[in-house]
Image 1 (cartoon, one colour):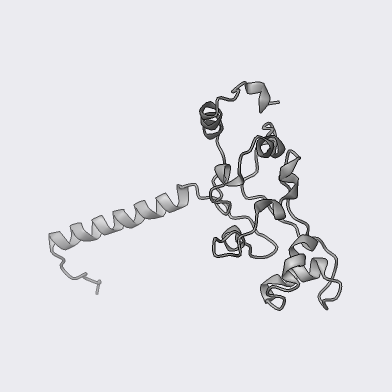
Image 2 (cartoon, rainbow, N blue to C red; image 1 turned 30 degrees about the vertical axis):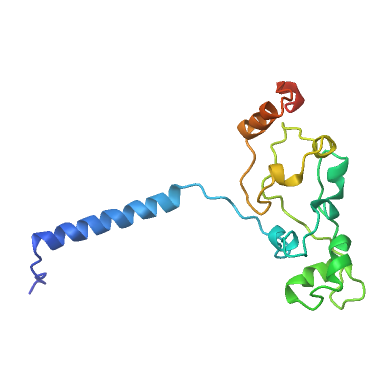
Length: 176
């Protein structure tokens, strides 16, 4: 004997069809929508924690010292991080990679450097000089309002700023 499905009211059938179409649409959107890629980092890090306005705020250039003079702001060496974290949260297991990289007094020490992945690197044909911008008096948060964000800068955002500041928008300045 063959299976005979129960009789469903037409409104129930239409409801199930609409539900199925909604689920398929959401699956399609999830699969096809570009989401920012979160690169794997050697340890968890939050700029917000280090720059909080609760009295623990650090100046960006304490870790990104090259921003004063060089094209790139630079990433801090593990020893720079350890200067504070030798005393602040020294036993936190999340900081084990830091101790392994820079703390010869720690049992996990291997001297392998931390390998940070840039979240929003500039394309190789763009030349941005942090030193020129800091020398002109610009603060880090003018361009990096949320440093933990992966939103890349756009040509439009740079041009808008240059126009507001009445600075050259000559293509050769950034595209070399």
